[in-house]
Length: 230
Image: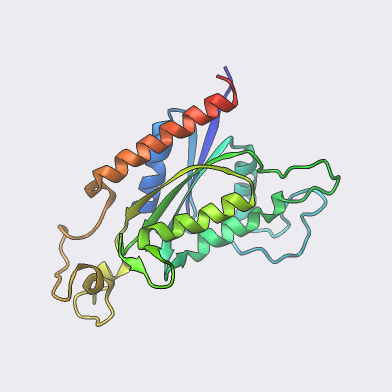
């Protein structure tokens, strides 16, 4: 039987929060061999366009991306999850995805890129939930997924879908969420909102999102089985 492996990347700098949980839910639903890696605590710089990867498709910037580069290349499918920071994909995940540039070179002219044809899925998280981000024309929790999808398309990764969840804005834990005039707690939950466990968003409170993540994981498996004619 063909061995299929799915790599999950949680791009949140915070460990064990909504992004990581959502990626894990998708992975578990595949029923395949999986590996979950968090970018928490990792040093990953953006692409510096040094072109050192042209000859062998191997990035020459030595940081924590290098072992991940090999994992991405070896996986049959990848699930990337990330939060929205300031109305954009967070910087850590953006830097990680920028480094996919090393897979794009075809110096011998044989056609195709190193990630072309891989299967992917996306977990998108935003503290503002379905609140629309000015200038983006989409809900806060959809923004990171939309940006990741762009990276997938650029690298010819077939995207099976995106599942979005609401995370907890940092204002819940900064210590001033109830009094700060620009607090996300006030903006998303009302000017008189009081911080309590009941209003802090978490994945467990979003059963419809969990169900969508499980369905996405199953769809990912079915696509892989079709690809490998299992």
